[in-house]
Image (cartoon, rainbow, N blue to C red; front, side, top):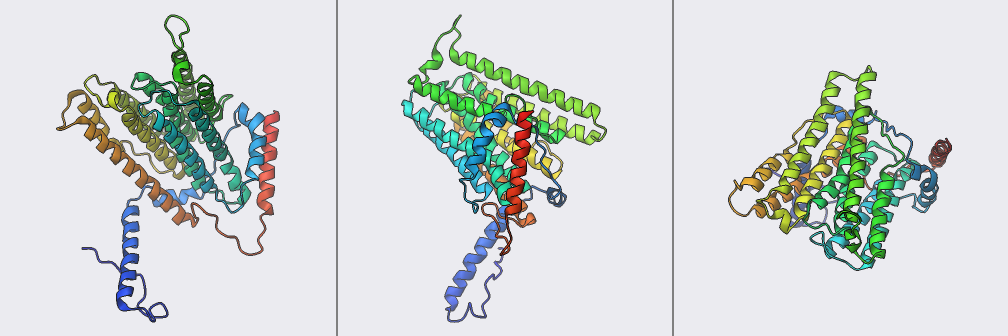
Length: 440
């Protein structure tokens, strides 16, 4: 049995006048907290070299999309002035994620099986919550520059929350169009998660986040627009309206969304291929890493599709949200590991342990090789994925904050008398550069 080392001294002012039994209780509680923290964070997700590379990392972003530059940047510049200076950027990101969670919970309550016709106010409220999510997510970086608290953790935290909200967007579309347990719900989820992974894969390879005329912001506003239009139409029956030759409005929406996914995938592959052809710096190791990352994600998509489409399985038919959440969390986990490996320059190791049971679940869905009810095994795998994902988030944040000497959810106090005018000036310079780019 592991002994608990005394973390509270039994001598000195603390011990004075305190009964020994009470001291023992305090020592035990403190020791247990220390042991729990140590056991949770004992597994390392980032190497020592990777932590050292964090201090050298610089984020390189391309020009923002049309909607970002022309319309929303002035609004975001004003919105960030409403945020108190003591609020940490990661806390702002967490609040934005909470808005996404509330919107998802609202729709999940009224459409548990991704089908049904909630009252119109449900769609309006979900759209409002997603507007707050998008706005807060857009200004967290501005808040970091404003308070002088920018760090590599900010990018990792922001992208990690975006990866989770990508799942929400996919399931929103399934609920809004009342797609239920059809293949349409799975395809709508892919429309949300595949471009997100591929764009981050491109950035991890080239070191540059590329934005086109239509980007993430436009996709998020399309999602909000779908919610509002569905509410105005009185419910999801709008998307069952027939156009021509039996094609419904939801099929047209799926077709247009799929075109966007194909465009993102093809252009990203072309950009990465050109990068390896024209840049002298990339090594064979870098090319191999890039190929491994995209091949692994492609295999994951194929396995996920086989998991859902098995004719001998009733799990997706009875509870479509369950397998879709597993697929969404696995995708979010992969993109988060991808980003961490990119920022820290740690090698990307394929076939994470969290993925190992997926092929078994696929085989069981088709051939029922495991004893007992299949749904029980799927629930167990869902719980395993959730625990592994939370463990990864907790440990990664703890490793980074400990090494950099920062806090995740509050800003370290500056020495008395130190001015933040330099940070304000830096933010003004950044805004000037963004305005100049918008005018080009």
